[in-house]
Structure formats: structure tokens, C-alpha cells
Length: 215
Image (cartoon, rainbow, N blue to C red; front, top):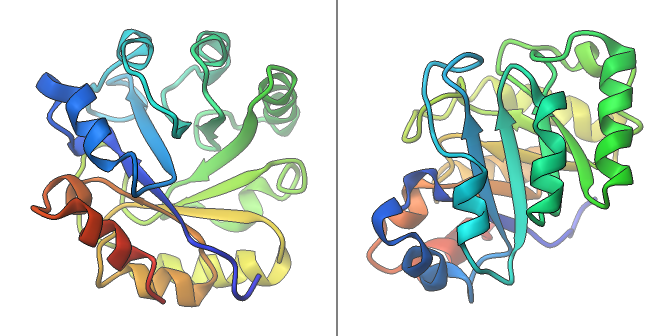
């Protein structure tokens, strides 16, 4: 997909939750999607926030829900009802290909786009049975669970492989995305970049977001 527009997804994991609506308002004119990272303390060693936070905010941005939970099949409906435009679950949480297919169908039937995330050690072959059914592939560029981690360059090989095999698939990357790593992702074939610490830690968030779009 050479020349594809770059989608910037701002992760609120690094926002000031004490003034979350103000934080969202500050980036809404400049970004494309907003991501809610849902962590359960089981699938990943950290806890974040749940459905009440999503229900409490107002935004015109597409809501991208990243489920880092052990039981995504039990959480889909509540996020669909809360207005999620995209729901991504982890391949590592659902091992069975048939169960993955059922979950993808449930997400799509609910009116959202369905995504699968794979952690840095997980090969692309792990999701070969369902990759043609998803709308989005999230390739983690850090081990999930905490914001502000260092980008793992090795995952770029996986991005190139996915782009070569699936030229029309939306590939999203999450973890350590800033103005230095974003061009590497874009060059490898990723056109949806998730950034949290870099965006919300910047004094000029408009400039920060703009810098992520530069190949």
C-alpha cells in the first residue's frame, strides 16, 4: 500500500486520567483514532481501566479498543455497546483458531472492525488461519503491559513479512512509537501508529503528532 495515508492512534494509557476529557480534547483535532488499552492484571501484569472510563468520555475520534485480557470473548459486548469502532484481542489469549474465528465474527456482527494482536515473540504463522478474516493486525513493538517502553527493532521484519503477504491489510504498531521509530515503521509497511508517551508527554502535541506522519 505505498502512499497510503498514515493513521495516528493516540493511546490514553499515557494521558493524565485525572483530566482525561481535557487530554482527549487537546489531541482530537490532530489525531485520527484514540486507543483504550484494557489490561486485566492476568494476561499482562498491569491493571489499567475498564468500560466506565470509555463510557465517560466524549470524542468524535474512532475508538480503538486493545484488549490485553485473558478472556476477550467475555468482554466484547460491553465495548460494542460503548461505541468501539475497532476491537483487537490477542492471539496469545485465544489459542484455538475456531474460537478466534467466532470472536472475529462476533465483533463484526456487532458493527465494529476486528483486529488481532501478536506479541514480539509470536510469529506471523501463528494467526495464518484467521488473518484473511481480520480488518487489522496489531504487531506489538514492545512486550505489552506498560507504557513508555523501548521499541524492539526486530519486529520490523515481521511487519515487512505481513505487508508482503497481505498488501491490503491494515497493520498497526504499538510500543515505543516516536518521531525516531515512526519512519522505520512506515518504511517497513505499517500505516497505523499507536503512540502514547510521545504524544501526551509533548508540550506541543500538534507538532508531535504531525512528526509521526513523516516517512
